Image (cartoon, rainbow, N blue to C red; front, side, top):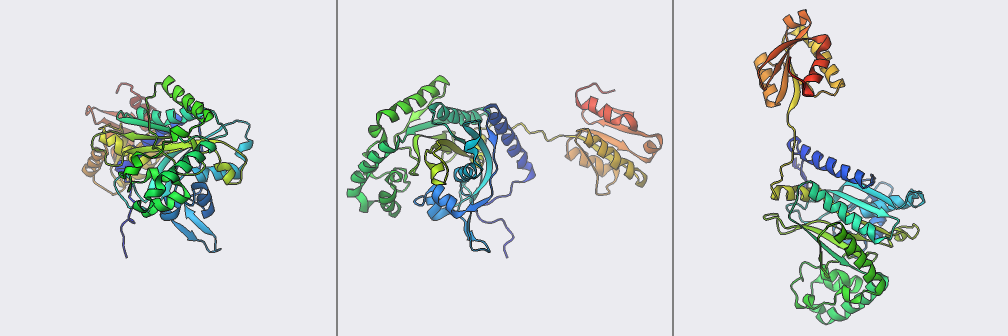
Length: 428
């Protein structure tokens, strides 16, 4: 029996979880400023949601999903990505009927993908994502990109590179698809097995192949930008204009693709150029997916969104030596000496906590010296000392661990006294 964590998973221990909490809190504040609301979907869905919502020809569906049958014989899959699940919830709960349109959503969710674990890419990963459903305005595309860039910049990242592309509308995509098939067919036998299949099912994804990226045919492949019709060109120009208006720098990369058939118009990725970040530089990726809601049984509804790996975000912060401001100090530690003090100690701790004061006490029956050591380890700002003598006089000795000053405070006014001290009041 193996008692270690499964391959591709990690434990986030208390010493690190405060970093996660800080990052998540900052992201939620940004989403609130942009008027995005949180959605939470189930950890698993009916497998068809991802087969239809992600696409049968994708690596996620073909190779990476954790799929199982329940006792009723239904095929279920642990969530490998967020867009399909959010889109299913949008359709099922008829959010397209909400008077406030477009519907602007964000989520924090764990995803599960059976792939080779490596630094920053795990089989169980944590993702932040947003989805905007119900608007085909290119200004929404720019807003979604702006939100993602704001997350990174507000957290302190500087070595960022935004890459954008247009996949065009359905007509543009069809013309480009035909050109790709014609271009790569003579080289079909030289391509990897996956690309030979992609050439038939979804030729756009050949451009995104990691194995064949150095093949000469890749360098001469037809560019989607040469096949954009006027409507698609105008749409892309508007997105670029809005980004420039917001002061967001970008690079246009014609080879940046989103491989699903319903992806169209804007596609983007955000990379880290920080030294030592690693070979896989992508931090976030997203795009417009008009057509997905219809695929899942809903009405014609345009959409755009992105997914951002939180593990990779924390890696980027570390690579750029961004210090996450974590407060490791404890407000108070109560040192209780003698059996008679226990009941009063428990009552004092309860009352302090009820007023929002962070406090702890000894639960190991340590001597006074051991309790003071525990207070030191927890970096307590104040130590509250309650012995049998103090109990008899109904006072507590309050010691500042910074100055060493110690004063007696009546138990009846202790909460108010500590509130004043912790809010910056002068020590009495």
